[in-house]
Amino acid sequence: MKPDPLGLLAVLEDGDLRLEPLEEGHRECLRQACAEDEAIWQMFGISYDRDHFDESFTRLLANPDRLPFAIKVGTEVAGLTSWIGAHPQWLTAEIGNTYLRPRFRGGHVNTPVKRMMLAHGFARGLKRMFFSIDTRNERSQAAVRKIGATFEGVLRNHMITWTGHLRDSAIYSIVERDRERLGL
Image (cartoon, rainbow, N blue to C red; front, side, top):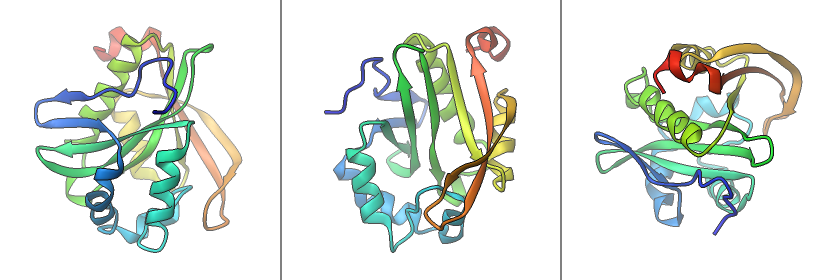
């Protein structure tokens, strides 16, 4: 079991949407989901494409810095998301490593999933949650703006992705004082 001093890795539900802590039993369903959009992995720091899926999935499960979830719509695995770098002393965490099958994009899944995570994070004592998004990924930036995140700036050459690309990351956050405005 991964260390989770803030208690962030819990089953979260809203109607037919469910976040389940990611486990080995999700591997095959998630492999199929990730294969539905091979091109998207060019904008991710880590690839879950068919050539890298097993290694990336195994690393995700083993990484103590990531608390991953399978995103389910009804009984179907729609994608994944994670808490990244939860910091108990600073009461901050990143929400990221999010992928949705193409048919689940457009806000009808991502928006309630992110709102569930944000509400849960605040309930567990977090003061700041943030998103680090490749500046080339305009769809993801629009999605976090839609949920009310504040743009904080761009970290230039923030990371080197699996393709060797020097990624600039747009940083967005939601902090405790935003709760009332966002109805969280």
